[in-house]
Image (cartoon, rainbow over all chains, first blue to last red; front, top):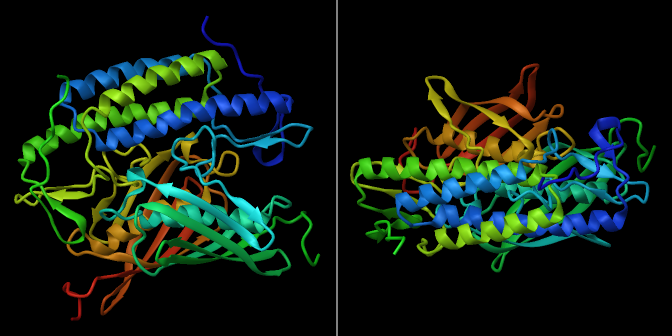
Length: 222
Length: 222
C-alpha cells in the first residue's frame, strides 16, 4: 500500500466550497509538497514542447510517465479540487487554473494586494505562446481576468466576472511581465476594475472589467 | 546516445515564422508522436491536482519525474516552438497555448471551420477550474479569444486580436462544452466576430471581438 487518503471534506457548503478541518500547519505542509511536484510538472510541460529527442525516446518517456500517473492515481479526489477552508479561516484552492499550487497550467500568478491595487510579476515561457515569441492573446485575457477579479474581491468579499473588455495595444513578448489592477469605481453590486500588462517598454494590453457581488452579500452602498 | 536533433529551421522569417523544410509526412509522424506524449502529460496535470497519495510518495514521484524531464532536455529547441511551415504549405504550431499538439496546457481546442462559422467541442476537466466546479472565467476568455481569432482569419489571412469583450451570463460548469463563433461584419482592416460558450442548458458566456489585419496584407474592401 503506497497511499493513504488525505483527509476528506467534512461537508460540502453552498456554491461548492468545502469545509475541511485539516489543521492549518498540515495544510501548509501539504501545499509545499504539492508545489514541489507541480514545479516539476511545469518543467515537463516546457520540456515536452521544446524536446528534439528522437521518436523512440519520446515513446519510452511517455511509457515511463504513464507509470508515474498511475502512482498518483492510486489515491485521487473524486472530482475537481474546488475551494476548501477550515475553521481557522485558512482557505486553499490548489486546483485553480491561474494560481493553484497543484495546477501546472497556472504560471502561477501570485497576486500581491497593496493599498492602491494589486500587482503580480510573472515570467511566461514557451507554454504560453500564441504568435511566434509572443504571449497568446487568450492567455493575456485569462491572467487579467484573474488579477482583476482578485482586485474586485479584495480578499474580503465574493465577486464574479460580469463583463471583461481587453484591448491589445501591441504584442506581449514572452518573458518577464508585470500585471497591475485597481478599482476604478463601485455602484451597488458592481465593482469596476482597470488592469494592464506591461513589459520593460510599457503597457502592451489594457482591460476594463465589471465584477458582480452576488445577491445576499454585503455591498459598499447597500 | 539517446537523442538526435530534429531538423532545425532553415531560416527565421518575418514575425518569427520559421521556414522548416521537413517533409510533410515526417511532420505528420512527429506530430503524432508528440501528441501521444502530450496526452499523458495532460493526465499527469490532472492526477497532480487530484492526488491524495502521501507526502513521501509525492516526493518520490517528483524525483522520478525530474529524471524524465532530464531525458527530454537532452535535445531542446533553444526557445519557444513558434510557428513553422514548409514549401508544401504544411504549417505547425505545436507550442500554441490553446491548440498546440505538444502543449499540455492546451485542452486542446480543435476548431472546425464550417460555411457559416467555426465551432469546437471540448471537455474541460479539473485543470480548468476557477470557482468550485466551474470553468475559470479567464479560461473562458482565453478559449473564446482563440476560436474567434481563427474565425476572423479563416485560414486565409493573418489577424490579431484588437479588442475582446466577454460577458458572463452564468457560471460555466466543468465538463462537455461547445464553443461557436461567426463573422458579424467587416470594415477595412477590422473583422467583427461574435462567439459563445454553451453547455447542455444553453449559452453561458458570449463575446464580441474586433480582429485586425496587419497593414500590408489584403483586406475585403482594400
